[in-house]
Every structure is written in structure tokens, then in C-alpha cells.
Image (cartoon, rainbow, N blue to C red; front, side, top):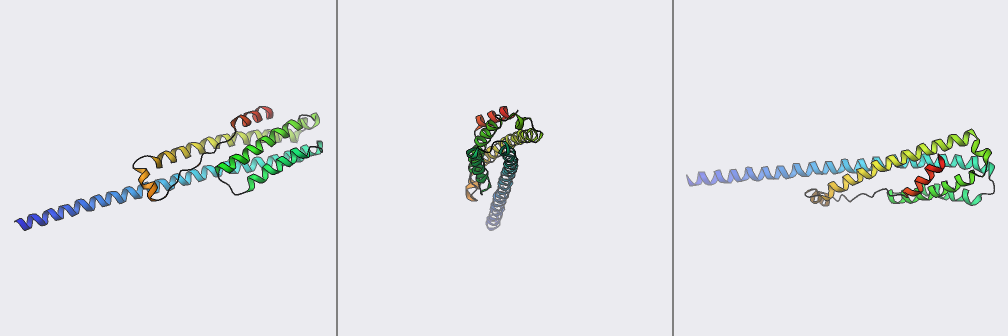
Length: 194
């Protein structure tokens, strides 16, 4: 009877141990998949911002072409816009994109200031359409930036909380960067482009 009890205890212990191991493996699997999904959502949301930044840069290039016809002597402003656009074309992450976005915002403010000196330019249909398109794109960028930053906040919170942080460290899931930009500069452009 003692041997039977001993084997029964070992069998029970092995079943409990197998259950614990299965629970741990299922937990790791679930958390890993959640982290991959979160990381992919962050990348997708950043891609949305990147598309709009590139669209805005293209619209600004068209705006420069129109303004250049009227203000041929404003080479510094055109050069600043070209440098800012080039910064967006380089491979980048959220921090680099935000810096390039800030450069382009400053150049755009200068471009709008130059264009105000030419009433015929401001009154032209092409100029008005570009201003409207740029304003809509600015609004989309702001919307996508908010969505991206909320996604990053959710992801970073998920990987920083216990017990998730153990799994995140085990599988090397780093925190993601927020997309921080010069909000005041954006506000000034929206007002001047309105």
C-alpha cells in the first residue's frame, strides 16, 4: 500500500508539474503574440504618419514651384524647403521624422510668409487648392500622430507592467518612441494657411 501511495503521489505531482509548465508555455505564447501584434500596430501607425509627411512634402514642392514663379529672388526659402524635404526622404524613425517635420514646418511658414507679398499668387486657383490640400494633410498628420502616440503608450504600458515585463525582457521587446513635434509651429501654420 505504501508503494501504491508513493506512485500515486508521484503521478499526481507529475500532473501538477505538467499543468504548471503548460500554463507557463501558454502564458508565454499569449504574451509574445500580444507583443508582436502591438509592435506591428506601432509600425503601421507610424507608416500612416510617414505617408502623410511624404504627401505634404510633395504638396510643398508643388507650392514652391508656384511661388518660385512669383518670387524668384527668395532662394534661401526655397533652399530651406529643399533641405527639409530631403531630410524626410532618408530612412528614419519617429524622432528623426519629428525633427524633419519641424524643419519642414518652419520652411512652410517662411514660404507662406513670402507668398503673402504677392496678391496675384495668393488669389490664384492653384495656390488656393494647394493651401487647402496642405491644411487637410496637416490635419491628417495631427490625427495620425495622436493615434500613433496612443498606440505607443499602450504598447509601452503593456511591456512595462508585471508580469508582462518579464516576457518582454525575455524576448527583447524594447519600448517604442513617441512622435513628438513642435505643436505650436503646427498651430501657426494652420492659422496662416486658413
